Image (cartoon, rainbow, N blue to C red):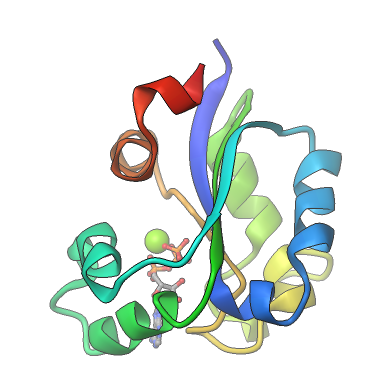
Length: 138
Ligand code: ATP
Ligand code: MG
């Protein structure tokens, strides 16, 4: 089976109308969308998702931002999905992101950076299980 990764179109990108363009970029890069849902999440749900960052100074702001409006949760599949999605996203800070990447095109700041992608295979497994039930991934 090809590798799976987890992604979020973050509230800034949904709010500014970039959902369709980001989905098109993901599609053009050869990912299969295994599962997708638009939701508004609570601060508690964001805290659980970003628990690895709980000691970082930006944690509270980050969780408030993720709960600030609807976002799009996705499970994506292709060979080398984890690394290929990170490349398509570009650097965390859009000022450092390569030309043509999703963050270069659509992100406005290091926090409001349009998209999330799992940073490893283990992280992807945790994140997929956090947001999706088994029956949603058939
Ligand atoms: P993500 O995990 O969302 O895919 P990433 O792996 O590129 O992004 P992380 O270091 O895991 O970056 O940080 C998680 C998120 O926290 C970032 O995407 C960004 O929204 C926010 N963030 C990271 N660093 C900062 C910072 N210095 N100031 C404000 N927000 C930050
Ligand atoms: Mg990360």
